[in-house]
Length: 321
Ligand SMILES: [Fe+2]
Image 1 (tube, rainbow, N blue to C red):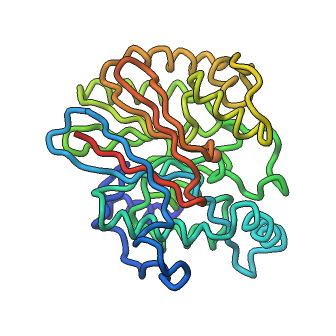
Image 2 (cartoon, rainbow, N blue to C red):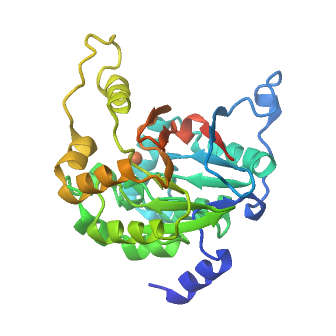
């Protein structure tokens, strides 16, 4: 690892979970001739939420997730070039435009940006260079499962776990200027805690660190890639991903699978989620991963907000008061 560079990046941004929009580079806005009669930022599909968190001063955050940048340089090898072709088609090929529109809008309209993972679709020099181009040294949030992917199904093993993450931790810690396991940033008396839960689970070390954050006694906004599943969020996911093209036939909850099953079966994670439900300092959860926009009450004090894919120009402005 290049510790000097990593140290420089961390120092440059003074550690944080949110990107201050004042630190974002400026970019030319999108070409109005593409859609001449539209409103100024009509290509963005924004939803809105207000979280009554007890901030010392109100502020707003653009929450985006799942941009899935899919670029590679010509010298990065056949596999990466093939992935670029396939995944540009998968996500529509306008991921960079969507990110640029989002950040350009954010710079004028909100105080911070949080990105909850899958900013890149897989590791490549070109993708990492785009992260730097758009965020400068200020990309914050949480990683997604795709940040850990080297070559997707063309090279990655099928089973993904903490050992698989170990292959990329050093590289990602260099490329992203925050603690990729758990990071905290306090804004106007609100503690934003970002956590790596990219395969649905958390580790005992992360739980311990989260509990240390709780001891600070401040309201907490938990930001992570994979949502904590609630009945209605799971139902929405199953409809979107598994029942596309047909109507709901049954109101019964579909059986748990994938990340949802792991959240239930992994003892450390299920204990952590049970504890979180009773933690009064938890005020909101911001997550992505599902590529759909949904929200549901998680606990008496916290609503979970899931934001759709930024590759589809989705984002949510969240006002914290
Ligand atoms: Fe994801």
